[in-house]
Length: 148
Image (tube, rainbow, N blue to C red; front, side, top):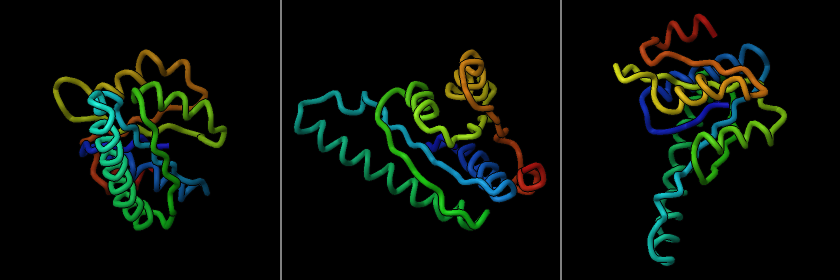
């Protein structure tokens, strides 16, 4: 499973997950989490914003579906959830017994790998039922192909 977002490192994690799945006979699940604070408005406006956020999530997932298909010949499954990203990732892993590994992309910033990687591969990693693989944002696609 990979957590999809708009970061550049998402592509590295996606490539690794796709190539690993192709080489092991597995599949790819792409999880997109819509943050709840985007809808803290009047009811009507909040519903419109929720629908727009869902459309944007679906568009991003469809765009990345092509990337997975080209890289590994696999059509991924995708899931859209609403909530706090870390909580939704953990909940989905708990709910789907077919998830075998969580693949995350680490950012190249001097501030660290990013909040999601820091939370899921750091403090909380011991609570998972699956291994966590962190793909550095600085890896080239060729290197990712070589190690996956």
